[in-house]
Image 1 (cartoon, rainbow, N blue to C red):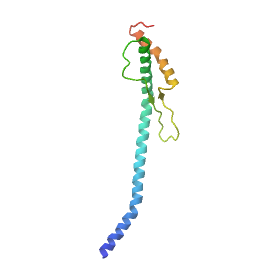
Image 2 (image 1 turned 90 degrees about the vertical axis):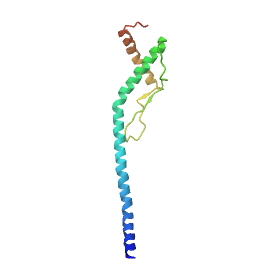
Image 3 (image 1 turned 90 degrees about the horizontal axis):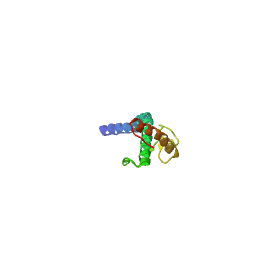
Length: 127
């Protein structure tokens, strides 16, 4: 009976320690995930401007191809949504690029001249 009583007392003691330990474990896990999330968003934000510019150049190339009736524009429908991201930001973060936005169309159009310049530099006549 004494052994059973001691075991029950120890079980009760461990049960009281379980919840705070579990809560501490979950806090640590949450902090790890928050840190990972923030660092990945930081990396994304470092890469996103170059990706956005490349997408705009692709859109401009596609516009020139379509306007010229030359080349094969298969492989991209023209849809794009490059989201804006900020860790721990409580409100909507506007997208970096939205293919349905007039700003995207204007930005892509601003790259068209560069595509024509590259054609000229490669020895092609256009117009």
